[in-house]
Length: 231
Image (tube, rainbow, N blue to C red):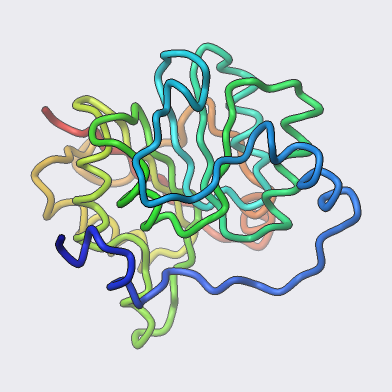
């Protein structure tokens, strides 16, 4: 087994688990709704058809924050299935409460490191789309190794996406956007969907998150990237 396939060899994380108290509502949501929406991390591949109780296109969001974007997508596209990965329990609790209020049946959540979930649980060519919105840019040069979008991770995404599947990225940090462009350009399994190989327009069904809206109010530029997994 290679180091990329074995989570014990993964020592550099792309995140730090933030402190922060869960609200009473988030705690209740975790207790009441995790059995319905939650999937536990395992070293065994997921049977996604069994997890969702049907066969449908699967869309994955990595690092969904409070989950407002993911819940809205699942609500608007009930003919598709949505899987969210997030390491921060308050955000998971917020999403579970939202999902229950919307009576969503096409949403599942894993509270674990995205790299390990993709390595161990997500089958090859099983995803129609992956979205990574506003990952931590790790501004300081000595921390760039912590950035999620790296060559090995991009190769892993390509393997888990079905041929023709979409990869959507967004950031409000120009240097990280440039790093994303350079990294994706090195992988022949992805083609940039933007004219001229640059930045894309925001997907029509991607509503701005609260984090994004705050950045826009502060004058930040939001840069979207869109790629297709070639066959």
